[in-house]
Length: 65
Image (cartoon, rainbow, N blue to C red; front, side, top):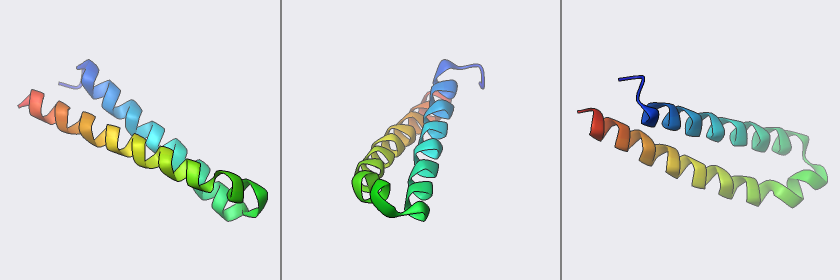
């Protein structure tokens, strides 16, 4: 089950969401020009990646059953 390519793709998508989230939290904590310039873009990327990750997880669960 964990040897499925879909499992690894979903895990990679979750790690990508985590990476973008950490960049956003770091930028928010740092503040300044970086936060003003990239805060909305980072939030959009996180939402898109999170949506993709959820779809991949649901596909994995549906196909595993």
